[in-house]
Length: 227
Image (cartoon, rainbow, N blue to C red):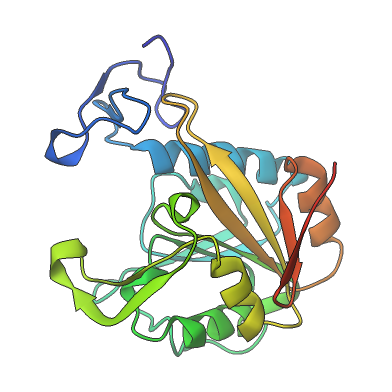
């Protein structure tokens, strides 16, 4: 492969965890920074988003993630579960309307009540704020499977999300506008779905202006967006 990692700039890649290759057959792990498909796809997405200039925005991020650079934002707070600044996603110990942006990549499948977590994320957003959330591989299954307990054979996940997650979020957040976007890893070409939960104000139009066509949901009724 001649592609370079958009996180560290390296061009050497090896097998992923367990020796796996990507679904496109390529070697997925950057041997320099350790990034995988999802990290580079999210980095590409956020580089588009931060073209709107987020340097005056404060951010709450759940779990460290190499895809996100703190320099993009005016203030960047990270919550590490059972570690530094540990916050409960289902009952975030912050006032209403505290943050311009909330980020949760591959964390909501680890909480027992994700509907409460969706509501809490929305609650702590400022009136013109948005949340960015992503999940393991929702593109390749249509319906979410929720077994209601942490499966330690599957990284402690309570569920596997499917493409219906946009409707699930909309049911809990009828006042939100939710944008579904196909993010792609520039190294392997692997695609997956990511989501922006917008509270209001001009940010929705700004995001629509920098993201390619996808689905838009207001409440639990997604429609195709034409761009």
